[in-house]
Length: 172
Image: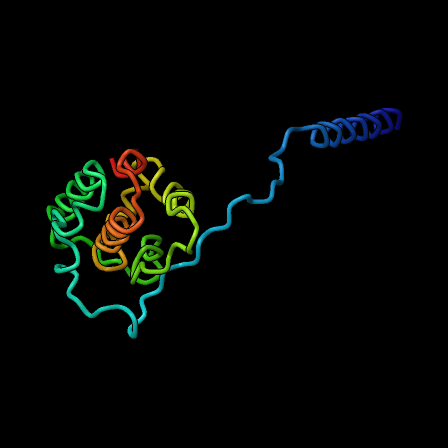
């Protein structure tokens, strides 16, 4: 009887200690997001031009070269070469793939007066700055895949002046 009472007291003391430890343990702060994610780009059959993806994506976009940063276009060319050398049996992206966010007609993805890089750096960083194992899931073809990302980045570079030095870490 005495042993049972002692054991019960020890159990209560241990429970109290565990509760105190969990109460004072460090936990992640709950911080509200400071940057709102931009809206997803959805393909729109009315506004999106019906052009074959091979015409939209060229290894060196000649007409746009004068409007953008040479390093940025070099990175785009490198990305295009890598896409072109992917095996033919590479999976095609579907509409709910993470890269599908960047598919469709990019016109209007940056509101007037906004900085394109400030708007899209967060979503690009969240998607492309991962360990190599997770990045292999992003190797998919099609308009909702790497080709769509290439078109989107081409638009940001040529129409909004995004510099190559900003994209370098994400694309390499």
